[in-house]
Image (tube, rainbow, N blue to C red; front, side, top):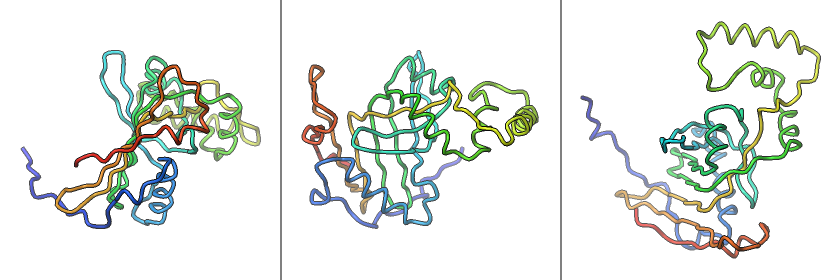
Length: 225
């Protein structure tokens, strides 16, 4: 057995106080995102780990890249026939975390996903590098494969087939928007006295509030570390 009791460090970069909070969690998120994008040690500032569950309740996690954020949610794209895509089709509940460890920060999100429209999928897919488009065609994401050579050969064949041609967005590939019910901001603190604030959406099931009015429906609470 390996024991790592002494693998530890102190968190002392900065704090997070009530005066730092904004009416909308999205405003604070974008402030933090802009700050961590300036930190060289954080190579993938838009990377988030998303968790879904299967039909037995078993959770699965993986890292995806957030491609856009606005006052309605966080967007990522994937193969809809992948394991996460199939799980989200049956259960749209999801959680996500941005692990900005070098900044001693985390943002944790819970909510549900909704599918983006075909036009939104096509708009983003068309912006991808040619090689990435071909990779999306070549891979049956999450399906077993005997060896890497099979995948490489299929990729090379598709490269040749589509050279000089437009690559259309596959029907089984698209975007998901995470519609948060809560967004928690975590800032590391000395002696493990971390700062935690959670924004919780206050909206009853029968509400017809427009998305543009959601700011007034966020309740904020400080959580103990």
